[in-house]
Length: 324
Image 1 (cartoon, rainbow, N blue to C red):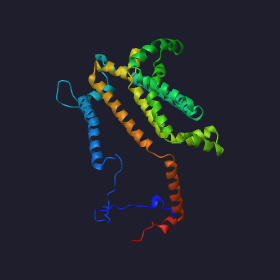
Image 2 (image 1 turned 180 degrees about the vertical axis):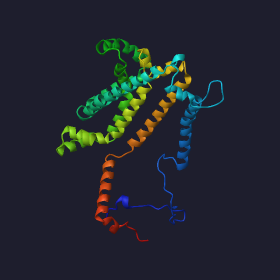
Image 3 (image 1 turned 120 degrees about the horizontal axis):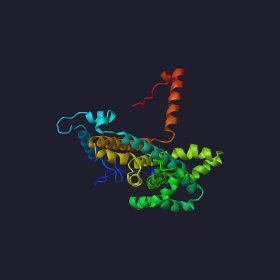
Image 4 (image 1 turned 30 degrees about the horizontal axis):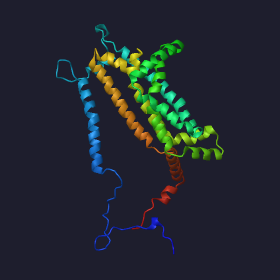
């Protein structure tokens, strides 16, 4: 008795009379919970309105003139030409932006140079510590920010004695706050492929640890790393509690200070921050969906096409057409 492979058997739908029911051309069956095209369009429109209506309202507010019904860009121009004689000074806001960017760079460095190598080391060498590392990284999200700040105060007395009280020292505290947001995308990416087998294969082919990590592991973790970095940037730029209680001038604290004297300019910068966060989310999706090695494959394809064109074979070969 010959075995029939299950993959080669195809069952055609039949009606009650036993005849084969023809499948409608151009219509593909849907599986699982995948929404239809109409449902996806409705979801896209609703989500777009949720984002766009507040942004459009904020933009319309920034164009208003006090006491008038006209709209213009005078508030945008006043950012670059403040009336210092009347007491209007936006320098604390720009200083806060500079401090937040500095804290962001240091915090991203902590994530890439401390958290990421630690997660790889635990996954490759000490998997029994995986749960402990996850518990430590997720723990800050379960503690209220005000409790963390109260705990940071005596710690920062020691930090200020060693490094001074410059705003960049907030990166040590913010680096703890962002741990849950930076840990989860990388952990999810690691669980998506067999990291141990991949590294052992690379090592068995003669590569050292640096080559294996740089050329094999990191390209496969690009989506998790990019998501982790962008979430870290978004969290740092939106952090207010720690900077406020430790009396540091950052973007959020300066924004609150400016809003008490000029709500239009503070709304302009808040709108810019929201648009920047939206662009980050789009970049996460775009960069995360790129396959590892796709750029190299495209360059090799272009090189091959250029070689064929230079040798004159492209016109001779031509496109292959199927006979009807």
